Every structure is written in structure tokens, then in C-alpha cells.
Image 1 (tube, rainbow, N blue to C red):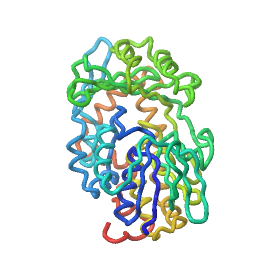
Image 2: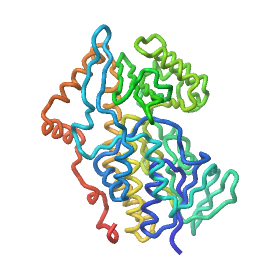
Image 3: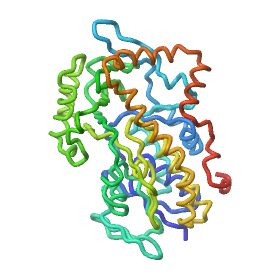
Image 4: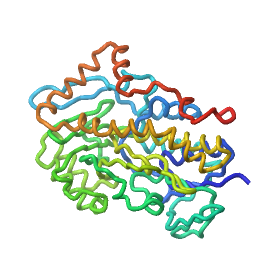
Length: 406
């Protein structure tokens, strides 16, 4: 019988892993606490480089490109002056970049995997017991089941990580910032542009979504001394909205009317911008993939691209090792160490760039960005490649040769 793998989490890393596991002869099952395919809003996510290549090898690049966001202009608000307009930076530096709403990407991945993967929605793992022959998993409502392997792909606040490796506080490192995302009626008449506003320790971006009837706002901010904004506190809706009002309540621009919508938004998401740092993300027959094991920081570290790559690499290493999880997990961690470290380094730098710490930086950052957009395309792409420090293809992300023809 083919090895069975239980994957906790039907976001991005989980379905990518399930796809490649089924291609390599494994039997994947995905358990997801949400009652169905997630459609909870969230900010747009980015694919680029090798993560785009993974999507292409899955045959999904046409669908992803068709669903990509159609925004071609960034307009930065300036007090008492016309907005500063520029093209989107990502379109200048690479042809392989795709920006897509998170929900759209999740839906595409689910559609591509639902025939070969058992999805169990509306269920959570409550206990994990490893033994010589596999892993016995206990669920909140369904009967316990045995699997050969268990993979936590359940995000920054992973339940699998907590049960197998220990409390989140042991591994979470806050970068000193917060993000909030929510949707609202598109009363600003946004179309193909993103409106941006920078202030000291605050940044706001808002844009149209779906058919243009609604818009979405992304707030990035720092808060003095953390303001008690850790995960447990942010589960309280009142705490979340108070945190936003404390951070943005005295701001001008469109902030008052945007914050008014945050109170009643059914998709309001607020969290600390945190990294997960672990010496190893494998233990026995259990391993972690994506943000559960190595979140580089939401909205700042390229976590979606890492999740896609991680799902591919883990399945690839399991196939190379013939299902020997000791060898496979060791190879998986070896291959992923460098891209994880790069994302981890990028997180704090990106946060500093997006959320200026001084009045001078808030004024000059948009001008520096526009100067970059005016460089010759070849120069812009050379500088961007040097900053990313990675020109490899997907075939380079393996501890040894490719299994079969995949």
C-alpha cells in the first residue's frame, strides 16, 4: 500500500504538498478546521522565481495568471500636494512575478487536488501519538486514524507545532510590527490603482478586489512596547479594533472612514508580524511546512513563495528517499535552510522599508521608489536580482537527482 500522509491545513503549503505527494505515489489526506475552502479575505500574495516554476510544473500557471490582480499604478498620498504616481515595482524587475489574492490561489490549488486528495473540512487535530509503525491522530469530532506521516501546514499559529514541538512562544520572534487586513465597500472608486499612505511607524495600502464593488485595506504599523498585542490578546475583536484606533486614530487622509469600516468587517484580520525560528522542524514522523515551520513574517518575508517551494521540496525528498522519513526530512531541511534564512533576513528589512521610522523616511521613501521605477529595465532587474541573491531554477532545490520525470 502507498504511504499515507496526513496534512494539517488546506491553505497554500498543504495543497501544494498534497499535489506532489499524489504524483509520487503517496496517499495524502488534508484536514482543515474551516468548514470549506477558505474565503476569508486577506491581502494579496506574491509568487516569483522558483515558486512560480512549481506552479507552472503543476500546470496551474495559466489559471493563476488569469486570476492575478490587475493593478498597474501605485499612488502615494502627500499632504497638500498631488499624489506621487509610479508603476508597480514587481512588474519592472521580473517577468515571473505573479500577484494574486490569497483566496483565489487557495481555490485554484484545491480544485487541482480534490480528485486525488481526501479533504476533511470542519475538523481539528487534538492529539498526536507516534509509535513504531506510524502516527495515531485524534480529532475533535471524527474517530482517531493512523497515518504513516503527519505534516503541519497550519500556519503561523500551528496546532501541530504546539502539540509536537512545544508552545508557540518558544519559537515566535516578533519583529516589532503588526498587520491588519479587512474589506469594505469600494466607496473611493478604486480601479487598477493602489492608494498608499506613509507616516511615522504606519503604512496604509488600499485597492479594489473582486469585481470592483469592494476594496481591501492593508495596515502595517508599529506599536509602543508591543502594547500587549500578542496572539491571545488579538483573538478578542474589541482588542483588535482598539489596537487599530490607538495606532491610526489621529491620522488624516482616508483613515477615519477606513477605520469606521474595520469595526463591522467580517474578515478583519489582525496579527503581529512574527517569524518562526526553529533549530529543526522535524521530529520523528512529524514535520512542518510553510509558516508553521519557518514563517519569515506575514506580508514582509515572502512566506507564500516559501510555502509553495517547501511543499514541493518535501514531497520530492520523500520520493527520493522511497518513503524513508528520516532521510527525507533531513534532505528537506538541508535544501530549505538557505531560502528560509534568506526570507528571514528579508523580513526585518522589508518592514523597515514599508513602515518608515522617521518623518524624513516617510517623505523620501516614495521618491526613492519612483526613482527605481525610472531606471532602465535591465538595470532595475540586475539590482533586484542582486538583492534577492538567488538566480537558481527549481532543479537546483534538491539534495540529489530528480525522482522519475517529475
